[in-house]
Amino acid sequence: MNPSVQKGPFRFVWVIPLAWFCLAWFCLASCNSNRPVAPPVEVPNDAQPLCAVSPADINGWFRSGSSTLNGIVNPPHPRALTAL
Image 1 (cartoon, rainbow, N blue to C red):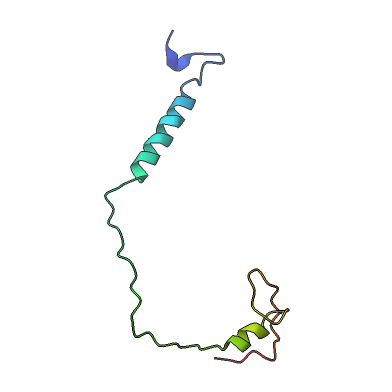
Image 2 (image 1 turned 45 degrees about the vertical axis):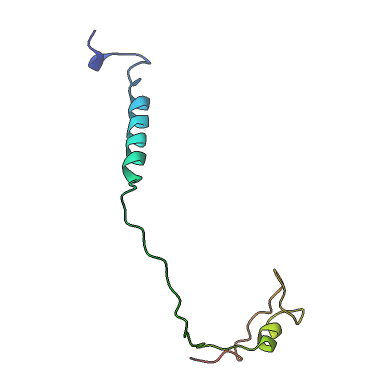
């Protein structure tokens, strides 16, 4: 019997192994270890603070009045926002 004209439930028995083969080939082809590694970003020693915010201003953003980890932050007031 010719497998290309086979009838019944085994007609598409080759589909699942072919799908696994294609998936494995794609994974291996996409894991190229020969790619160059980006150099680490270096922060300059003489960096200037462009936006200095006082600790009192930051504490005012929190509902409790002090900055805490996972603390509740007050919503911004639209009239308090200034244009840059």
